[in-house]
Image (tube, rainbow, N blue to C red; front, side, top):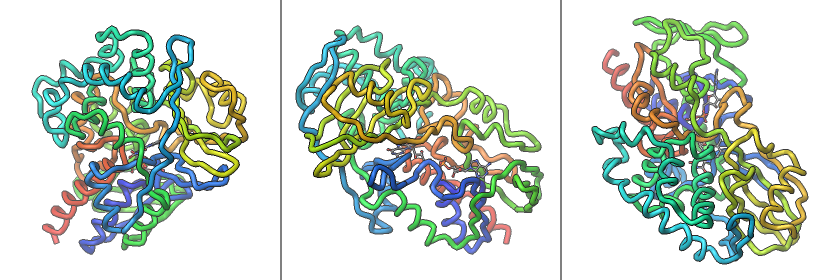
Length: 425
Ligand SMILES: Cc1cc2nc3c(=O)[nH]c(=O)nc-3n(C[C@H](O)[C@H](O)[C@H](O)COP(=O)(O)OP(=O)(O)OC[C@H]3O[C@@H](n4cnc5c(N)ncnc54)[C@H](O)[C@@H]3O)c2cc1C
């Protein structure tokens, strides 16, 4: 197993249940990959993946299995958004009503294009709509400026990418997974989280894995043939395996030295990169404050911010922007300036985050495709190549890019491998 993120750990758990010998090689000094609960700003914060929902079947099954508790941040009592440069203040319901017409029109044909979200390529003419960016489709609506800015900012929250780079089909897939309801899609992607952090999910899976797990072990090279593979680590150690499961994210899989080389589609997708290249920032402000959320526009460094934790004398906000080049989550002054777009009454005390784009073991946040990538590459990204198999949230069918998708892909690959390996016993 190459990678000890959720996809790798789930695959390892399932394979070890079939009494297969499993070795997990993880480059970082911790497990979890793009989920990472870390103690910062006085709280256990999710630096990566956070929100999950009962409409996400794979992750919900794990929550039930391990008895994990789910909670949510405080309900916003105030909402801020922009009309041009003017700040509007209202309620959550008022903001939802503002974006509702745009959302409905944009997503009206969701179930025509993605009738089966678990089979995202089912519609034969999907390539036609997969050529469009989400920005192309928003532009076609000719929304008034206030609605346009609000809708665009909301989509930045979902895409973590410049909207002209994000595929419209990625938005359709999320909405199809909630049977066409944008409200439910919004809730599924951004409200409920694990009370004990994603760390508790990672720990529960690890406790259930009967395998050797090595951290701080970066894989550099894989040579493979019909009989098996030889893996070379950064320290030069060589490991022989009958099968290899590669769980590297879309953006870095092409950097791995594989011989014979991976198929052209996997390499092309990795070279093109995903659309998502944004930023997630955690911000501690002096309290007490009323819980709020705020949306600016797609072009602001932070498009979305909201209260996630409320203390007696402080509060912690979470914020997202489309482009990690525009703002560093560790830059106190830049984050202060970004918040002043809506509010100059907040005293920013501390900020933190992780630069996932520069991190050599991810170089992306959560998967959102560029136009054409779904129809050109997904099938090939899922396809085994000889003894190499590929599990990743980035190549999942249903909730690709989510924790749920990582679990789905791990279950799929483990099922295929178990069938092969136990049949040949
Ligand atoms: C900022 C952010 C916010 C997110 N928010 C949400 C959310 O709210 N809800 C949600 O469901 N999802 C969210 N996600 C997405 C979710 O976290 C990921 O889709 C999921 O965790 C990916 O799991 P994975 O196992 O497929 O990949 P990864 O977690 O990336 O695992 C791959 C593993 O491979 C390791 N690796 C890389 N290269 C090598 C190598 N050469 N040798 C050995 N090991 C290697 C990596 O260190 C990593 O551990 C978010 C992600 C980010 C970054």
